[in-house]
Image 1 (cartoon, rainbow, N blue to C red):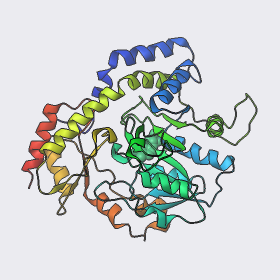
Image 2: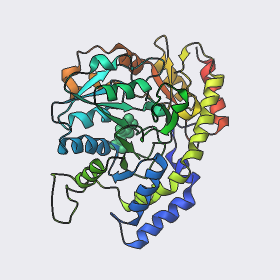
Image 3: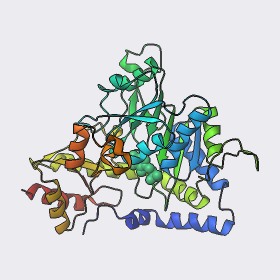
Image 4: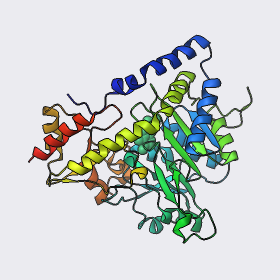
Length: 383
Ligand SMILES: *Cc1c(COP(=O)(O)O)cnc(C)c1O
């Protein structure tokens, strides 16, 4: 059996340290808003390369707080538009509609699976306040063009970094001469835009043993508003500035995440080995692989393939019968979901194509190269 992802095996990779961290918190008697959060937030901000990191309950809330904070700060108001990829996990879209903002769905490119930056400018209106990019599957979605559009139209750039901890993007324009390629530098996703939401859902590249999330930003006012919102709207005990919620990261999860953060680069390096094996050896003509990015621009959270000739589900069943777990990300696009009935009639053919052809192969720090070789052999034999 080669499972799609064995969380038990992933945890076991650093099991002793994780157990020690959990035990330390359990016996400390301090379970919320303590030293563990402070330490992890500091270490994660340092890792991502931002001034602030605010731990919160999950990745959905992280993004909800970013938009809500912009509303509280008067930067956005309900009814404003946010450009967002149509091909994403629905959580990205929910954080926009939850705040009374209007998602404007933009198709992806089929060869990258990420938002098509050729289509963004036409989606911008006088009510557009932000572009929210999603580094889906662990792939960098940022392009210089997106950065330029944000400057041109004075838009906030928000990153959904739920799937891309440890992914880099080449970013231009940190000196006067933006045309010179020497001014391109690699920055971690989550540090490129005005703010980023991160998820520590157990299956993510940096995963907790339960729910967790964080906001990273260099914006002092935004950081303060997010921290306040996620703590009932209060930054001073019994004084409430906003109608917030309880959305905190607990001390046990922070301690676990701080252990796992130390191994993130190493774990991602293993994912890259797995991915490179797939890229080098998958040769079945039914399968199309997304463009191979430079290694540093892909954290390989998932390994998506597109299966042609209507054989995606047959491929899934065939692999399952042969003991290999695969998952579809995602079988129903957000605009086709019942919760967004008003969009059900929209035609987004590339997004729909991906929903009908995508299949994610096993990848992760606990998948062995031997197992990957077996998966490839099975895939190449599939007719
Ligand atoms: C996982 C995920 C989220 C939400 O994170 P949770 O921690 O599960 O709330 C948001 N966006 C994307 C792209 C995700 O994959």
